[in-house]
Image (cartoon, rainbow, N blue to C red; front, side, top):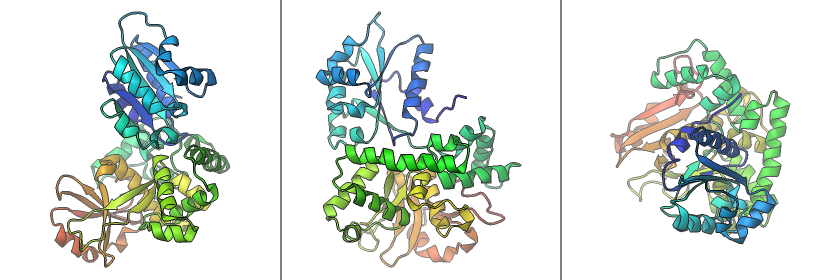
Length: 407
C-alpha cells in the first residue's frame, strides 16, 4: 500500500522552481520514501531523473573529490533540465559548498532535490552559504490525520477529523474509533515505522531502536563530548514538557557548563527532537521574556525516554501529553515563527499564543479536562490583549469531547 505525506504536494509544486529543494527532518521520518515518490512522479512526466544515495561509498568519494563530478554520473540526453535526487547529503564533507557551487554554475542545467539529517542542517553556516539558492522543507513525523490514513489505508477517518475541525459542534459517527487512534498516537507518536507496527511490543522495540541507535548517530555526527549527559538532558526535558527551561538550572543538575547546555539544546533542536517556544509580550518589563518552554516533536520519543506507555487516562502527566500534542498541531497550523506562550513574572500564563500580524492572533489554553477552565484566571491576559480571543481546548468532558483532536 502506498502512503503519501501532505508535504508531497508542496514538493511537487516546487519542482519547477529554480531554487534547489532541501528536505530536512529527523531520522526515520520518511525522507527517503518522499524522494522515491518524487522520482516516480518525475518519471511519469518524462523528465530526466537520476537518484543517488550518499550512503554509497563510491558515490560519496566521487562527489567529495569535486562537486562537478556529478556530471560524470549522469548523461544529458537533450536540453531538458535534469533532476538529481540526493539522499543523505549530510554525509558529504562539505554539503553546503557542494550545493552552492552547483547552483551558482549549473542551476540552469540541473535541479537538485536533497534530503539531509542533523549533521547537514546543524552547520551554522548553512543559511548564509545557501541564501537565495535553496528552499527548506521540514518533514516531521506523521501528524495525527496522516497517522489515521497510514493505519486505516483510506482517508475516511481523516475526512471526519477535518469536519470536526471545521465545525465545533460536529460529532462523527466514528468518534470512538478516532478517539482510540488518538490515544494510540499520544502513546506511540508518529514515526511511520512505529505507526505501521502491529502490536505494542513491536512499537516499543522500534522506539528503543530510534532512541538508542539513531539518536546515538545524531550525537556522533554532532560531536557531542558526553553522550551520557546528553541522554540525561533529554530525559530531564521529557519530564519538563511545557515547562520553562532554565539553562543554568540544567547546567547545575547535569554538572555541565552553561555553554555545553546551550550547545546540547541547539543540537536537539537541529536534530528535530525538541522545539523551544518563546514568550509573547508587549511590555518587556512586566512580562517574563527570557526563558522558553520545551516540547518534543514526537510523543513516542518522549514516552520512550520516560518509559511511560500506560493508557493516557491513567497517566499523571496526561495534561503535559495533551499540551505537547497541541504544540505539534499548532506547529503544523501556524508555523513555528508564529507560535508563542504568554507568562508574567507573577506566574499568570496562557499555554499558546498564535500571532497573526501586529498584536493580533489567537490564544489557546490546553486542559485535559476543560471543565477545570476558569476564564477569570486569565483576565490579566484578556484585558491586556482584548484583540486576541482566548479559548480552551480539552479532551475529556461531555460537551467538549474531542475538541483537542479537532484543534
